[in-house]
Length: 76
Image 1: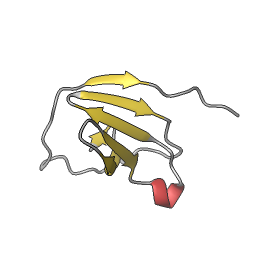
Image 2 (image 1 turned 120 degrees about the horizontal axis):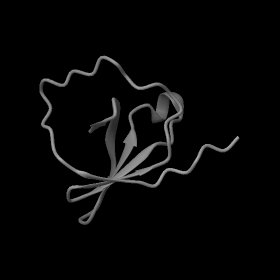
Image 3 (image 1 turned 90 degrees about the vertical axis):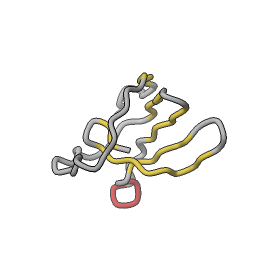
Image 4 (image 1 turned 60 degrees about the horizontal axis):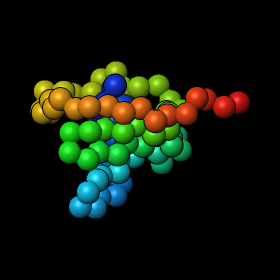
C-alpha cells in the first residue's frame, strides 16, 4: 500500500482488519502503522523518516477510502 508517498506492507491480517507496517520499519525502526477494514484506513503513529519520491505508480490500482487519523502529537 502507498499513502502520502510512504510504502506499507502487510504485517498482520485477520478476517475483520489488516495491519500494515511502514516498509522502513526494519531499516529506520519506523513505528508508523495503518489498519484497514473495508474502505476505511486508520492511521496510527507517525513516520521518523522522509517519504520516498520515486515510487512507480503505473502498476498500482487507486481506491477511494475514508481516512481516520489517530496519530498522537510528537512528544519530545
